[in-house]
Length: 78
Length: 197
Image (cartoon, rainbow over all chains, first blue to last red; front, top):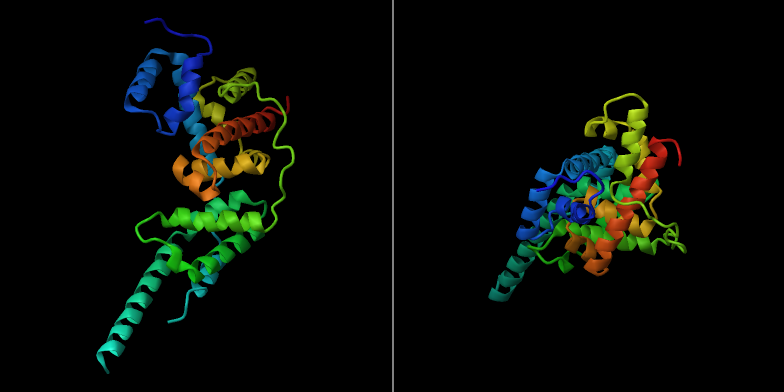
């Protein structure tokens, strides 16, 4: 199998659905085979994955404890 | 107590139990609801108001929730509807700029910036060029329609299907907005991390 060194359109098209785990089993297997053979895409795949985790962590803000208490107070009194 | 009264009392007690269970389950999800709300609006105050209003409405209309279905998605649906009702500004031009760059655009930009700085360009080093402020700022710069979908899927961890039902849009629209929204996010990140174009 030839190793791709430049931008790889097929893989780029599959990258997001692959990361979102919405590919069919056959498509997934195909993407995995490609990632094993293509260092260019494998590198970008790792980047996309760490970027997503990074974004999630950076954007996750703890709820203020006062708000939690306010929400609990909204419950219907027994 | 007669037979009918006893039935009524039993029914009322069962209803109270269901309501309490509903309220407890909803409250357990409040951290996750807040996390999404915080990124849908600009300020912490707005997010807090929105979450409070959401819970007030959810507790009033708990009977319309179908047990066994996704409560977190149900709460987020209330929240996004309230957010729109509050007169969130409708975006007239939802990003007219062409997005010729592919999905790898950000990586390529960051990688060359790391190289110029004389470092080895492994993936972790590349991501580390981004600060938390860069990321939060970049996400807020994504137009609402696209940001809603990115926040629900990438931060709220909702499926395409849940995002579609929360926002009341077809699943195909979720996919196309997600794709475009993530690209806009990356363009914004690239501008922040590498100091403009």
